[in-house]
Length: 367
Image (cartoon, rainbow, N blue to C red; front, side, top):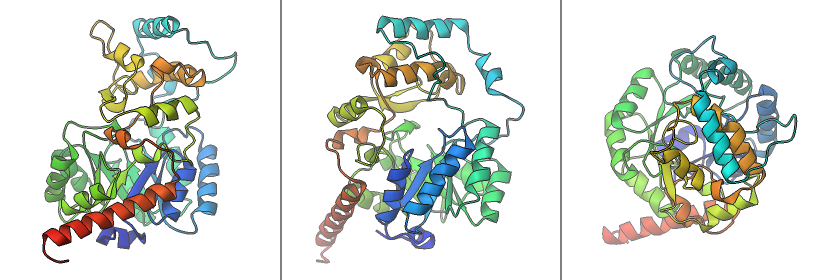
């Protein structure tokens, strides 16, 4: 599964794996793919440094990357407290009532919320980059599209390629104009923030829109046959995420979440603004239903929604309140019905890719 891009990055297989878990990212890299560690949860730069030190010790000197959440336009002088003050009291009351309805216990005195969308903030993201560029990362990906121009230049000065996620060909062209190196065409099926266009349509549109810039296909990819399909559509690799959530290396912090993922079908997800304020595909739960109910107050724009629900989600996860318990995940969750190691999943991808190529060669009369 080699392409021009994978050869440029020095990886055996053009399989890029995004994950919030260092152990998964390192295992992906060791398996011959390209592990990409998600940085959004690292508010403290020292914690990111700790995990990048661990990555360095467990990637066998093979390449890996970092994914940040950073707006294209600079947003300076805005603190987390400033943003918190913008949240309406009515929305806080809705959260309180919903948690009370399901009997969700309070956190202990002094216990901090463990989940907060803060990486979007200018200074937090830049602090992450101050740490990251001290390490030999080979790729910087941005979940919110093209990062600011000075960040792109800084990455290039460190010989780091820059990737940006796109949900349409129009977005892809804007990324190309901004000077990024790789477009990740993320289809409607994907977990997390997505657009409205399915990957089968989106991938070739982006390939055509930004050629010869390389495109990675994302969304609904969890088998080698799907990898082969993405490459046939013109992609130079695949960007995977959800498929790694049920690997044995993934630290989900909740056995109940893992069980829900293993039991879910491909129709058990929903694109909802309940998590961050932007449409994000996740497991459908009574929590997402409450926020999507037209009789409710409606969600707030990003980042207000993420800050509003941070403590609530921490409580739901800590006490494993099953009806409300969810996680971002794509429609590929229907294939995630057993726990396997990253290496086992990766081996399955390569075998499936070989089967697909053999099948096409037979159809083409080459075998």
